[in-house]
Structure formats: structure tokens, C-alpha cells
Amino acid sequence: MSIFINLLACVFTGGIGTAIGWFIQRRIHRNNTKARPTSSESKGFEALNLEKHDVESLMSTLKDTYEGIAFDVETHSESVQEASTRLREQGAGTSDAIMKIMKSMLQANSKLQSQLEVAEDKLFDQARQIQSHVIEANTDALTLVSNRRAFDNEMILAQEQYATDGKPVSVMMVDVDHFKKFNDNYGHHAGDEVLKSVARTLRRKVKRNGHICRYGGEEFAVIFHGQTTEVCLEWAEQARAELARTQIHYEDEVLTITASGGLAEINEHDGVAGMVRRADDALYAAKEDGRNCGFWNDGNHNYRIPTLDADTSTDMRTGHVQPAWSAELNDASAFCDEIGRRLSEWKRGGSGLALSVLKVDNWVDVFTTHGEPTADLVLQATSQFLKASVRDMDNVAMLGEGQFAMLFPSARLENTSKIGERLRSAISRCEVPGEHGKVNFTVSVGISEARGDDAEGDFLARAQEAMSLAGSLGGNLCYAHDGEKSFRVTMQNTPVRRKNLV
Image (tube, rainbow, N blue to C red):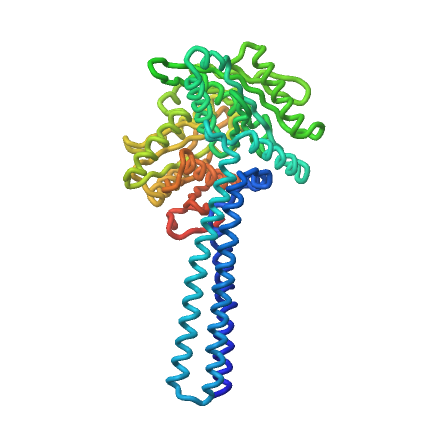
């Protein structure tokens, strides 16, 4: 009996360590499953200058929580020690007495666990407060994009990544043309509306491919981590063109804007400081060339970014003009607007919202190898497959050369995945005539479904991520993103049984 009593005492005394270990594990798990601050937010926290009373208040609350945990553990330790002593004193006592002591020890353990859960919630809330301060300190209050402090932190990160692994970064400086006239003619509130509109347009165009900052005044900066200027040229011109089409309804007036841009890429000679300076040089070249245009700098000279025709869309790498048949499809801007509208409707009580994006595999190679007429037939054939697969309420768009998208209101991930996989399979069997015989082509498909916490463009970015994964694995694949992971879709697993989890 004494061995049994000693064992019980050890087990329940160890309950302190077990409970504390449980608490720590829960904290680690919760931190890992919640959104972590980005590297720029972490750096922003290091440079954060919170108000003194905010810091003192947070530290005081953390101190109180810590002392509360320490007191709870100490009290629990005393309770367990007392019960352990009573167990030993009972010795060969009645089983009823021993069970009564065991019950009191179990109650002490249960009480401590509840107290630790409360403490965990308090600590998590305090961590959220600190993170909220970090976000606020790095966000421009007017436009709700990142501010100059965040830009500087991103530049530090970019310099480190370039120095360690040669990862490229490009910066686009965007300046609203003749901004002063809005303040002078309509008042500063009108100027504020112009700045907010520019930020919304840039955010819609960039999605997750770039980081938008308000650099100062009417000047914005877009940071493209991992991107070269060659890749960014098309986006830069499309963003400029969309800004020029923007109409801002202010009181009884319709305000129109234009903007000039300068693009540059980091190099080994002058780092991020030189990159920003060269982007500014390119911006000034755009201003001097009449505004409402963009220039890019290669490290030595400024070159004008080719302007898109008002009625066509040109691929900046191939110079290919989008054909007339594509007018039947929405463009990227209209598609993003439709996503925003449908997402708002769905959040008010819709039954589902999903989308599919797909790209022709090795599109540039198709164009350069088989020529423009064959490439046009490939795109036209793909669009016909897409239009034949949708309902009247669905939305089909051309996002860019060789890239398409479909929006499915009232649809879920499973049904959309089946459509995507059937499309992929059908297109892979398609042939179009070429100069030297028939040409086969394939597509990579990405699927996603709207989530409750989605902002505009978030679930489009998930579909694009899944599509990019399909392309990186060789193409002619369909992948779906469930909000956490991308997984391959086949007719056998759509999308219940997941293969090739990434």
C-alpha cells in the first residue's frame, strides 16, 4: 500500500509540471496556427515607438498575468503537497479516506488547468494588442496601405535577401500627376479621395505579387520581392493605364487622374538605395516626357515602357496584340471588380463562391515557336472550352496573355474542382492547325473557394498559387487550394481524397 501511495503522490505532484507543459504547448500551437507577423512587421516592431502610457499599460498587464500564473502554481503546489502528506500519513488507512484525498488532488489539478486556460486567453489578447500596435505603426491612416516606415523595413529585408541568396527585388515609384490641382480646385478632402482611389487601384492590380506603400505625399511605391524589371513591365503599364481610366465621383464632379511611374531593379553595384534612386530617376524621366507614362532604368539608362493601345492588350514580352475575339471576355480589372461585388454578396448570406484560373503551359514558347496565328488559335480554343463550361451567371475573363479565369457564384470547391479537371483533360486532347502540322497544348489549373475572412483578391491569389504549383510540376495538372494547402485534383479524388499534399 505504501508503494501505491508514493506513486500516487508522485503522479499528482507531477501534475504541476504536466499542467504547465500543457499550457506552454497550447501557447506554441496557438501561435503557430494564428497569422504570424511578416518579417517587415517584426522589423517594424523593433523600430516601434509606442506611446509611453501604452507600453506601461501593456507591460503592467503582462506582469500581473505572470504574477497571477505564479501564484496559481504556488497555491496548487501547496495543495498537492498537503494532499501528498496526508496520503503518506493515512498509510494503511481506509480506502474511502484515500479516495477522498485523491479526489481533492484531482480537483486541484482541474482548477489549475482552468486558471491556466484563462491566463492563456489573457496573454493571447495582450499579444494581439501588441501586434495591432505594430500594424497601426506601419500603416498609412488615410490610404490603409503600408507607410514609409514599412517601406524602409522592406528595403532592409530586400537588401539582406539579395546579399544572402541573390534574390532580386524591383521597385516601382508612382506619382499622381498634377496632384496639387485637386487640393486647389476642390479642397483637401478631394485630394484625400484621389489618394485613396489610387491606393485601391494599385492594391487591386498588385494582389499578392507586390507590397504597396505610401512613400510620401502623392507618391506611392510598389515593392516586388523576387521579381525582375522584365517581369514587372507589363504590370507597371497595366497599372498606369487603369489609373488613367479611373473616375472619382466627388460631390457633383467626376475627377479623372493620371500617374507617372519609374521602375528599377536591385543590382550588386548600388544595392537598395541605388535601386530607389534609379526608380526616382526613371519617374522624373516620365514626368519630363509628358507624364501619364512609365520609364524603367537598367542601371545605366532610362527607357520608356511601351504604352498599351487603348483598345488592345499587349504582352510586354512578345509584343503580341490581344485579338478581337477576346472582347467577348472580361478583362482583369472588370473581373477583380466582379470578385469584390460577389464576395460582398456572399458574405451577406450567399451559398458559395468559387473560382478557377488557368494558364496555357509554356505560352511564350508556343508563341515564339509556332507564330502569332497559331498562338491566337490556342487562346481562342481555350476560351471556347471555358465559355462552354459555364452558366449564364458565371464570369469568364482573360487575365493576361495565356491566362484565363472563371468566377462561379453559388458554387463550392468540390464542384469547381470537377469542372477544372474536366477542362484540363479536354484541352489536353485538343489540336489546332499550325504551319508545320497540328499543335497540341495543355493548361495548368488552380481552384479556390471564398472564405469568411477573405479580403478582396485573397481567394483569387490562392487559386493563382495553386495554378503556379501545377505549372511548376510540369503543367497539365489541376490543383485546388482549401485555404491551408494546395492538393492535386483528379477525377478520382475531387476533392475528398487529397493526393500530393503540399
